[in-house]
Amino acid sequence: MQPEVHNSSKNLLLGIDLGSSGLKAVLLSPETGIVATETIPVSLFSDRPGWAEADPKEWWSAVCLVVGKLLTQINCEATAISAVAVSGMVPAILMVDRNGEPLRRAILQNDARASHEITFLKEKLAGIDLLAMTGSVLSQQSVAPKVLWLAKNEPIVFAATHAVMGSYDWIASKLGAQPHVESNWALESGLYTISLQPLTEIQSATGILWPTLLGVERSGNQVGYVSQESAVETGLIAGTPIVVGGADHVLSAFGAGLVEEGDCLIKLGGAGDILVVSNAIYLDSRLYLDSHPVPGKWLPNGCMATSGSLLRWEQALFNNVSLEELDREAEASRPGALLSLPYFLGEKTPLLDPDLRGGILGLHLGTTRGDIHRSYLEAIAYGFKAHFEVFAEGKLNLSRVRVTNGGSKSRLWRTILSDVLNRELHSIVNHPGASFGAAVIAGIGIGEIQDWSYVLNSLEVGEQILPNNKNVEIYQERFNDFTNFGATVAPISHRLARG
Image 1 (tube, rainbow, N blue to C red):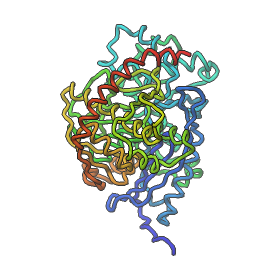
Image 2 (image 1 turned 60 degrees about the horizontal axis):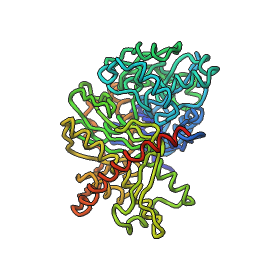
Image 3 (image 1 turned 90 degrees about the horizontal axis):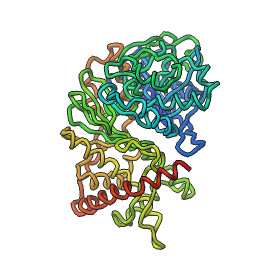
Image 4 (image 1 turned 90 degrees about the vertical axis):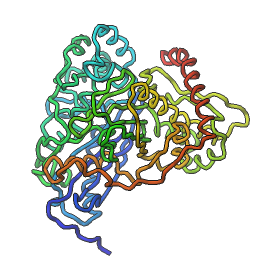
């Protein structure tokens, strides 16, 4: 049976989201909603402890493949696509030559190789209030330490570098957009001020001759058209408008309906993101600051280096057992039976320490695989609870709490989160994530969607999870133990990280 032919008038919006494990894309009809989704897996490389890299050529191959797959799903021609926007990891970095071609693998945002460079730059910049100037402090996520690492360790690549770009901005430029960086890449990179001007002080502190810092564009700005060359490779139509998308966690939050102050989203992806809407600039040295796509709003947020990536490591360790089976075994385990630290890639917020390492306490000969799995789910939940406490200290009151991404499919994990956080949780059913937010912004950029409020009530809210009071008490005690455990073993982690 042939699929129904979609109306070929130019009314579909293409949103692309580049993640650490896959590239996801959606086609959105402003009138009827999402009409097609597709995911292409991509590889994550970790050749050394703490490294996280990806191959941009594989990213581009996925873009070229995904367009045809989407159009085939609905038996539609590319002429139906009226605009495209791209989202992705932030601040991943690509070192590109004058033709915009990558000179090496991309270094991802959770890469922890530049710990010595972070220490060096912190000393050089001790008299500068980076938090007030950029919205965040120097950390594992900052771009300058990684660029300095490349200058010292890969001088041939560095010498050939013309500019530093982000993941999704590079995809947009490969499609045909003018080279740029999106405003939230600029903010989270630490290379630009809150007003999005290059921060010359940090360039000077590195002591190296910097590549070009590209101009900054905001979500929703139109930055070019699909080129003839890219049209041939992707199947898109040359001349299709390209709109600036944005950081994956930001567009995922926007697409999940976070528009009012206090709205909160927890993303259980490869990393663990938490975002809260604020009506004013919200500065805290333990967090990151992003601008909300809606002008005048902000998204203070945290990102833990591991979440789903820790579970993927666990699966590999246990002979590729399914997460569903691990969940079934963990349901029989006692809450808080073990205590784990999830710092398998160091830790980003709120600890900002790339030299932390994972750990597990309480093992005995009766310990089961389910006990271990449950302790990892709990450990990540404790990490989110630490962020809740930071927001409480800053008097930013959290209201609705929603959960998305792959981990939200686990009812056990959602239940543990609700108990640890002592909060009512709602999951978004089949939330397409940042790809949906990117498609909406593509529509806003060309005037096909008139208002940012389009996202409100556009996705199905799933099961409500209420905290179990008995478990809340257990987990509060374990959270205190988690905090103490982490602080106690941190010096040992640091010695192990130094080798």
